[in-house]
Length: 107
Image 1: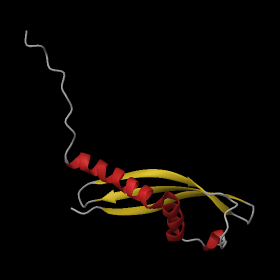
Image 2 (image 1 turned 60 degrees about the vertical axis):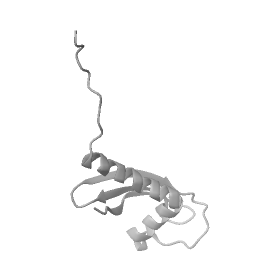
Image 3 (image 1 turned 30 degrees about the vertical axis):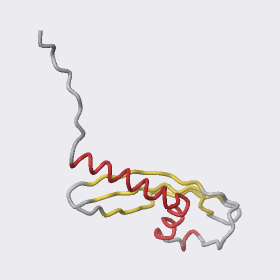
């Protein structure tokens, strides 16, 4: 089955400079669902308040935009690593890892 990944923003922390409510920390969750099993991982990204770019007022931000910031900050390898982590959790539910058993001695 194909796993569908969903990124969500759980919370954001702001500072009041260089602009009011400037986002400096984003806490997020990445969830995966293959139709039978679900797993997730959470993370936090910190952003420098000295970054250049177009400022978007806090009340005009969208979750999609903020998730874009997180994914850009993580980079392609970071995003695929997070998705691999979630997929690994799902794979472990599908096929639980084999653990050695403490077997009594035969004598």
